[in-house]
Length: 338
Image (cartoon, rainbow, N blue to C red; front, side):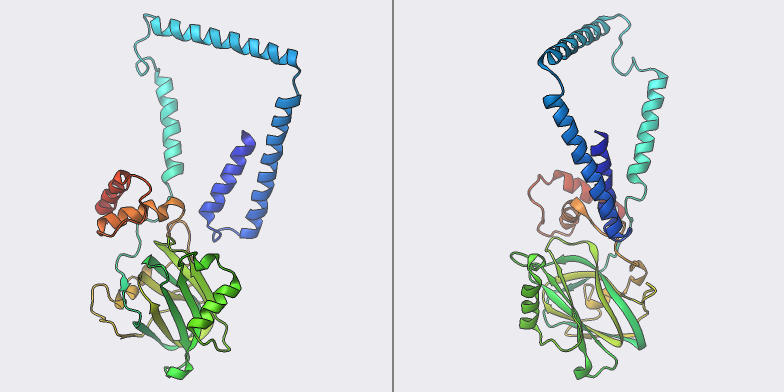
């Protein structure tokens, strides 16, 4: 049992780390060693159960266990019939209540402290047209290490591009990032060659390196990181195929600082709209240094928390394999805290 507990805690630590807090290679080795130890322990216990006891010993052990069970049952019946028994809770001593209280408090602290952020970007750009563009001007040449954006919802097959330029001339932009939401069998599951063929069918690729970022359709309510490592003054974000809802977007320098934006220009979009593209630059203080379980959904949160939020927004629920009552109750909690 102890070996399986070690494996369980190792798995949980890796899930919470999300491969961003700890060094992935080191913890992969730790998990592998813990798993091997668990498998060996299981094998040893199984061999002992199969070959370790002779028939006569098995009979003795079985008889001893039966006698113990009978004595326990007799004692339970006597206790229930005793005049001193006043019910389960009344029979508990102060010491029992104290021990249970301490265990409950300790577990609650471990379970709820640092469970996750109690805030996230609220406004969003609902990109419903495939010809919308955002042109960002930093006012000077800057080093851009990566782009982070908080993805809320997206349609299968939606994709966008991120282009960079040292000046604002049309011909001088080069494609740096390409982000695709899974479609059908999910682009995320396809081979590198199939992804490259898809890219080449959509864009004429130049000499500059391009980062291919493919995501599954349920990968929502979380920060997405696009690596670029380039120098530019202008960045052009194109919504190539809709729809995609983005709550916030920020550009990070090599020191993990958010790069301030000087001016923003919008193409085929109303900058004053409540759900227009200007909404992805109005909460820059929420852009994190990197994605973790604290600021992004993970595990079943991508189903249940998302579906609870969809109930509030009158959106067709994504997760329908379970009865909705629990998610409706969760949506009431979201409503109270937002």
